[in-house]
Amino acid sequence: MYKQDSSKQKIDFLCAVAQKEQKHLLYSKEQLFLQPFTVEKAKTLLEDEPYAATLEAFTSRFCRFQDTLGDKLFPAWLELVGEKQKTFLDDLHRLEKLQIIESSEQWLQARSLRNKMIHEYIDSPVLLTSAVNEANDFISQLHYALNKVLDDLKERT
Image (cartoon, rainbow, N blue to C red; front, side, top):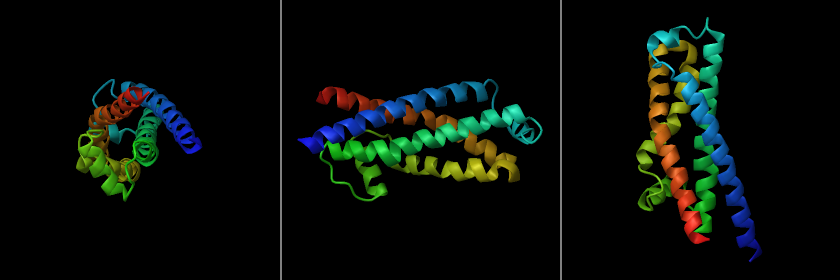
């Protein structure tokens, strides 16, 4: 019984954190994408510090939200529902079968965006632009996954 109470407290905490991160990510998205994020805009980042800070907030919040879901909330939810955890990739495939995420392959691709958004910041405006826009497109899948977990937890109470 204690373990179950502890697991429930943990997942409630992680859901609250994820919802806050989701809210902050949406704010950063709105600020960054007031205009389309283009290669031309990416080329101005070294001179336009406020815009660079807006981009930094977006990328950090995207990565943090995705990490909270993928590295913390999903494993806690799988444990709570009695799924035996395996490797990260196996867990993603299981989450896809359970319709918590839309695509394990797309989830893995989105995880690789972190390096592209951070390391291509100065070297390649073209790659940075592509990665930032891909991250923006993936946000709907992050929301979908969080909502699926939240809906499932409501049904279990």
